[in-house]
Length: 52
Image (tube, rainbow, N blue to C red; front, top):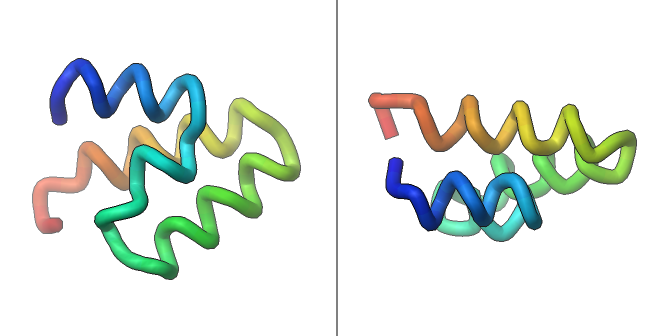
């Protein structure tokens, strides 16, 4: 996880996880619509996952 990805996940969470698959992007987008903080937290968790 690079510095650019962290900044992108803080500014616009769905764009940070765009290469992790459509499902991840949809989940982060919906959480961002519910509130900015849940979207950022979900994006950081998805980006920090070592399996993907």
